Amino acid sequence: MQKNLLTLLSAVVLTSTTFVACNNDGEKKPAADTTVIVKEATPTEPMTDAPKDVVDIAISSADHTTLVAAVQAAGLVETLKGAGPFTIFAPTNAAFEALPAGTVEGLLKAEKKADLTNILTYHVVAGNVKAADLKDGQKIKTLQGGELTVAIKDGKVTINGANVTAADLAGTNGVIHVIDAVLMPKK
Image (cartoon, rainbow, N blue to C red):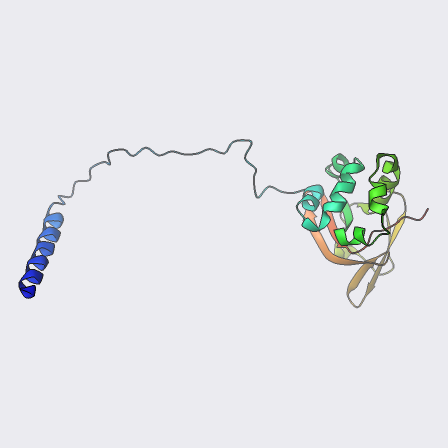
């Protein structure tokens, strides 16, 4: 009985396959509805691969939220989004946390805007200064008017004693070098 059932089932499958194969007469018939929907990008949708300027690079870094807040408080966003080029020595959040207690909070107050701007522009140099351009003992003039001193020892680069922990983060209007300390201008 099982053998007859298997034989019958095999015959049905074979007949169905043959019927389907013979039904193909070579004509291609259009599908009932071949509407294609194309979604166009709207101006409100962000471009994920858009070039970033130095401010956008800092904003996209979780390690630079304090720097971004300080740049905003000092009113320097528009300036640093300008044509440049700028070289920014960007202190990390940990660098700001290493300052004496209350320093950052005090500098973010409206009445300290001039002091904050002075400190932040001390971290910015006009031009595109890549890591390969830095030389031991080199003096670099900042937008603030002061000078930064480059030291290179055993391949490690420091700026006024702050270690460069990441270099040559290129943006459309300059370059960022990440440093592990906040640089304080001489008074």
